[in-house]
View 1 (tube, helix red, strand yellow):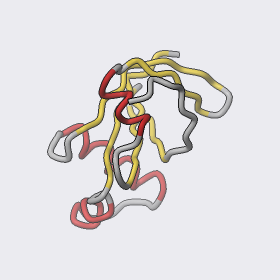
View 2 (tube, one colour):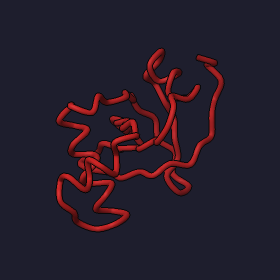
View 3 (cartoon, one colour):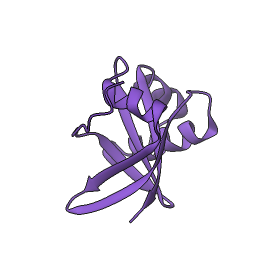
View 4 (cartoon, one colour):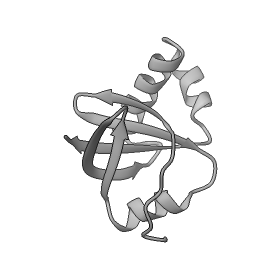
Length: 99
């Protein structure tokens, strides 16, 4: 954990006011920062938001919602097995966003 601001570009999708992010690979400083302090600020385009973020376990129902929405946004619809395989090495993050 660094507590330093990080600027990263990630895949995202917004579903009913929740922002889902996907990160593939090892846990990063910014992810450890979220685990330590869930308050985040972020930009989509030129609009700045704040919110509460948390990393989701793969068996969390919110993770499934995020995976399906992210896959649909970037690739279109697919079967559950395809989506689960695609995100097998990923961590899903959800942010309850406030403008």
